[in-house]
Image 1 (cartoon, helix red, strand yellow):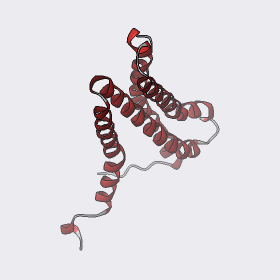
Image 2 (cartoon, rainbow, N blue to C red; image 1 turned 30 degrees about the horizontal axis):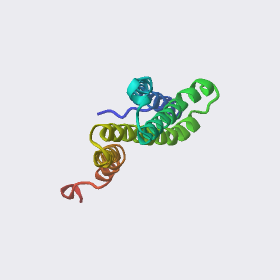
Image 3 (tube, rainbow, N blue to C red; image 1 turned 180 degrees about the horizontal axis):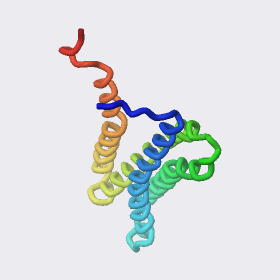
Length: 161
């Protein structure tokens, strides 16, 4: 395997392009969720819903809006600043903003699933589904990557000198 050599500027450009490609995936999920949440408000059943349902729905909508803003910010920054030599700052700040956006997306999905559980089965389902959904996102998006990093850093026992 040959080692690919790239300049610092090429690496930054590649990293920005990778970040923007990753955002396309997350944005699709946010857009679908937001569309669903938006449509629900205009149904006759929603007008008759109890206060808890409306509060949870609004919380999910606000979390989806915040996720949209956070996940689209690095693309807007890149578009506005791409000729200014600020790729390093866009990457550093963009990474933090994207992580915050992913947290908001996970929370929006969690609240939405809990809301559905409440409407269909009641308060116990709300709690169970919220816990399971949050645990799923928390593990897959935040715990598993840390475990993978640890595995990479700790070589197998048989490979040590």
